[in-house]
Structure formats: structure tokens, C-alpha cells
Image (cartoon, rainbow, N blue to C red; front, side, top):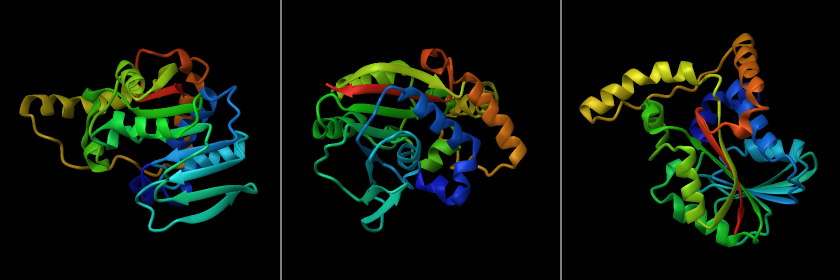
Length: 241
């Protein structure tokens, strides 16, 4: 997750409909996977690693992010959670890259470097923002380089040495609202060729809004692994080849 959004949500991140729903989708796509050790790359606060340690059965996790001021050790439910600015080797059998690839110029090189570091057969879980035409000031604010389709993320994974098991869209239930809000800006960008000004769209919400939006996202979870049509986020699960 992005540290810029962590600064906005603070300790309320676990209650926010977006992160709560993304965590549930992550767990749904990892059903049947029983990792011993995970490496959460570009982990920010470590929210997703913490969720997997608490709910997904993993025994230990390492979060790596060059933006950490220093290395430190923590724990979740008595399980080791390490924060590192860099790693040069890993025995992790689960690699997480949650909204990371869109931040770098060479996504294949980043993913491929970690795939070559991990044991063969290790599970890889990726998420990225969907559809270039949904580009907005929020992408500029977060320093994104691109958005993806399912096909584009699959091609990136293949080029990086990751065999794809499943790829799909999520947040289809809230997609129409987001598309309606972003389409005018996309049309202006297409007409002028100019980037929109940076603008953070992440907001804290009250209990009612969080419950309603969370319920909409929860309703699509059973169909999510088969959704190759539309959504706000692309999920991909694969294996190091």
C-alpha cells in the first residue's frame, strides 16, 4: 500500500471499505495457498502482510520498502514481521506486490528481479490499478506510471518469469460510479494531452458509507475470480516459473 494513503487514513485503515475489501479479495484469491514465509514488496505500512499473518496462516513475513527510515522488527499474533529497506535473498514462498508495479518505470525488471530471488514455485500475488482511461489526478498524486488491463498484467508477469494461474478484475460494483467521476477528466486529457493536477481521492468515511461500500464489494467476491470484464483493480495470482 502507498504510504501517502497511510498518512491520510492512519489507524483507521482497517476500517476503510477500500482496504478492507481489497484484503478480503486477496484472501479469496489465495484460498488453498498455505505460505510459510512471505515477502511483501513495496509494503508501506505492512497492512496486507499483517492481514495474512493474522488470518492467512503464514508463519512469518518480511516487508521491504526503500522508503522506510530504518530497519526494524515487529510481530503479529506472535509471528515475526520484519521491515527492511532492501533484501538480496529470500526463501519466501509467497511474494506480494500490492499496487507496486504501476510506480516503477520498468515493471518487468522489478517483478523479474524478485521472481529470480524467490524459490521456484513460490506463489506471486499482484494488484495494479485498472484501465488507462481511468487515469486521474490521484494517479499523478501517487506517482503512477501506468494503469493496466488483465491482458497487460498477464503479459508483464510472463515476461518477468511468472506463470499465471488466474487474473481478474475487482471493485466492479463501484466501477460505474468511479468511471462516471473520472470520464470527464479522461476526455479532457485526451483532448489536450495535459496531465490533470495532482489530487488525492482517498478519504476517511463514516460508518454508514464504509458499511454500504463494503457490502457492495463483498457481494462480488464469489464471482471475482472469474471477472475478466471490468473493475478498478487487476488481481493476478501466479507462480515463479
